[in-house]
Image 1 (cartoon, helix red, strand yellow):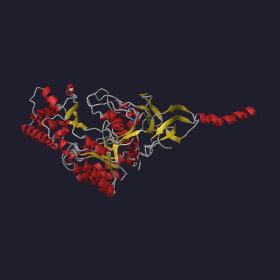
Image 2 (image 1 turned 30 degrees about the vertical axis):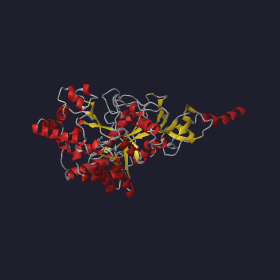
Image 3 (image 1 turned 180 degrees about the horizontal axis):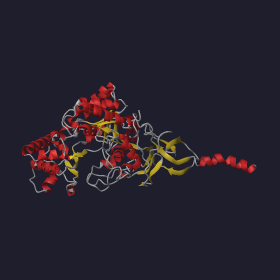
Image 4 (image 1 turned 60 degrees about the horizontal axis):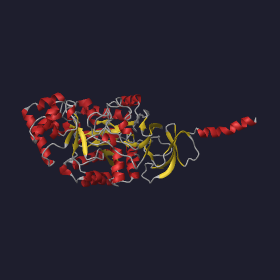
Amino acid sequence: MRTVLCFLFLIPLLVSAQQYDILITNGKIIDGTGNSWFYADVAVKDGKIVAVGKLNQQTAKKIIDAKGLIVAPGFIDVHTHIEGEEAKTPTAENFIYDGVTTVVTGNCGSSQVDMGRYFKFIDSVKLSINVAALVGHNDVRKAVMGRAMRDPGETEMQQMVLLVEQAMKQGAVGLSTGLIYIPGTYSKTNEVVLLAAASAKYNGVYASHIRNEGDSVAVAIREAIQIGRLNKMPVEISHFKVSGQQNWGRSKETVALIENARNEGIDVTIDQYPYTASSTQLSTMLPDEILADGQDSIVARLNRTDVRSYVIESMLKSLKKRRLKHFSYPVVANYRFDTTLNGKSIEEVNLIKGKKHKASAEAETVIEMMLNGGAQMVFHGMSEPDVKRIMQYPYNMFASDAGIRAFGSGVPHPRGYGTNARVLSKYVREENVLTLEEAVRRMTSLPAQKFQLKDRGLLKEGMAADIIIFDATTVKDNSTFDQPHQYTTGFKFVLVNGQLVVDEGKHNGTRSGVALKGPGYLQ
């Protein structure tokens, strides 16, 4: 009897010994609120954070000693393009090594239209990262109207509205537009207002790659704000910037537009990648009307002498505005027709082809590349003072505008590897543009709040256990424009939904990410 009583007395101790799956001890906690760091332990069980505080003499299946390290919520990258790459590289190392545990995809108007099927696919692939998604205006428009350069008819408009509503009920977090891309650029504001209203009906966000980020950037920002104003819905302006050398310094004006809108009561926020170069398709160098109706139509137009002359004249005018003599600012990231040209500027490509060192010949080279299928490009056209001024705005998040990188393929923008680490190393540690706590807030609770990911973005009891542990003194982005295929270093441990994905700085192959649904799911 005494033996039985002793055994019963020991049961609570045995249970306590297995209380947690993972216990993180001795770390400096930056909890995502923006408040200053504090010392505490963090306990994880069944995918959730179950305790934060001094958890003396507690044990777990795995104990991580975070002495000298920062413990923070996993970063949320609100502007990505992972579609088509999920199954190829489900481990998503470029994101994971940069501290990203959740991405929002479907940006710039480009997404899957059937969100129900997409989320089932995400859960079947089992990525190392969580995925939320916007429904894209461009693909909704294509599904109904193709690449037609006209307004939708009444029936077509109704069909597009129904597609957006269906996507919201299937779990999309909002509507995205890419008003610089075909066919979104052919749409008028009223069309976007009606589609955004369909998203607002299910408490969605309106996220926009605005119509112009250069000379007409202020007009484009006002359009995005007006869409939010009319629909009484949150607005996110994507990769906020001012492009073109002629526009350097205008961030004073553009940030003020955001501040004024918020003072009016409009929930508008922005995101930014911390670089002075953008990345998009070569086709954006051509006038919009040339790009209607698909590649065959584009080729037919560009083979006409009068159209070629018009396109060249248009590109030369754009170059003159930039106060440049040559097309040195666009650099090839991935040209499938001839990968030996990856990493070369259009000016360099033109010389390699043995053509005259003239801007007109370089414009001809652009047309030639378009006839061969186009290319992904990196465009150098922003100023560092503008980047810093935008960065200091408190309702600005950090985002890579990247997909899941195929390591070693092409010469892509380094933002796909090092966005968050660049902020933490260059702009926090080296240049003191932001405090560490503020940078973490921008990467965690602010995006979680904006995209209504209600159990993410904070280190507190009951939240999903997306947790990163990093060395603030050594974390570094190693990816450069010349040598982009280099992972971030400094993130020692990464947990996604309570499972260890990065252990002592190495991805262990765990794929514990899930699809995250928006507020309209199953309404």
